[in-house]
Amino acid sequence: MSAAPNLEPYWMPFTGNRYFKANPLMIAAAEGMYFTTTDGSKVLDGIAGLWCCTAGHCHPKIVAAIQSQVATLDYATAFQLGHPGAFELAEKLTSIAPGNLDHVFFTNSGSEAVDTALKIAIAYHRVRGEGQRLRLIGRERGYHGVGFGGISVGGMSPNRKMYGALLPGVDHLPHTHDLGHNAFSRGVPEWGGHLADELENIVALHDASTIAAVIVEPVTGSAGVLVPPQGYLSRLREICDRHGILLIFDEVITAFGRTGNRFAANTFAVQPDLMTVSKGLTNGAVPMGAVLVDHAIYSAFMTGPEQAIEFFHGYTTSGHPAAAAAGIASLDVYEEEGLYQRAGEMAPVLADAVHSLKGAPHVIDVRNIGMMAAVELAPRDGEPTVRALDVFRRCFDAGVLIRTTGDTIALMPPLIIDDSQIDQIVTTIRDNLQAVD
Ligand code: PXG
Image (cartoon, rainbow, N blue to C red; front, side, top):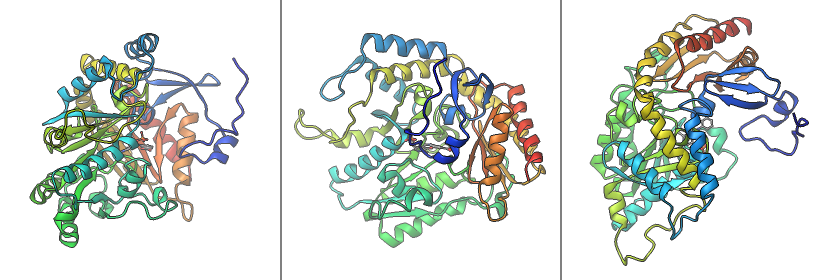
């Protein structure tokens, strides 16, 4: 094995760099449900990498597709030139997408997909002669990546406060998390659908004619698995329709089976006009994001001289051959292995397991939908997040990778997980909740 690398030069993302470098956790390999650390320990992956590895790690079919693609065509510009893989993936993706989402714009990450979707929304109104529709409405506690558009519509203050005035003309819906009403809800909470009506107040304040789009995660992920209350998303849809406002679903974490169906739009039977995806799109194996676009939106751009560029936007690596190959293979694997159905079947097993943590030390809420769940802990007095981080480290040492955000533990395992592995995750969490103060 090669010598341990110098940890200093790498400025790690969303990480306490000094703490990490003093207490590193290093992964060397992965297969199926398990990581292997650099010192040879096996760790059960309770978080699908980070919402990415839907079919588990190093799936042979996905690995082979990438290897073969890079050996054949490593790169081709996407500007004024094509390669078959990107078109094939676009067709596959649109064939499973809900409603009329029949066009795809490729990006390299969820953040880029979000900023692309926001630009499409604003430009769409402009090409239709409603160029005054510039406002974007996000939601408190929303996470839409780290681009300036994404942090502007996002609702997590640490991600925003250092970066100045952000995009102008942005407003936010209230979040729907209320332990007084919704603690320990199994699946969709009963209380809170009326919070969607706050959109009417925002529309009244700014006037509908100034608003381009509303963007929400159908299920808030990063901020700790906040499941939309009964009727909430359909009310948002109705209000958007009433006022000619586009509805964007950010499905970067919910797409590809996570909520028990292919997309959260299927689970909640609410149709967005634009949808962002990433992560599971390639099973995490090669970076890629995408925006799925409604037929009417794409068509609105397809005017003017045929040779003219309709949308001045794109990335050097949009639709990259290796990412496209990974995407095609991943979508095939999800269908062939029945992972969408499996997610629906395993969801009650995960629900029973996580809700059994009610009554365990420090637990103030448990929530779940499909194959995602959260266990919220009471913060330690004067030391927010430290208790959850303590549980995270202990679970890792005990061979289970969980995710913590604030004082919430989040679980989103690969969809290939089995009953005994779910039991192992929850038992490890319970044991370590008992061990921490
Ligand atoms: N939208 C959503 C809904 C996301 O969850 C992004 C956009 C940005 O994607 P990129 O690929 O630019 O990171 C995300 C990312 C967590 C966690 O702890 C989740 C994400 C990122 C980091 C941490 O749940 N999701």
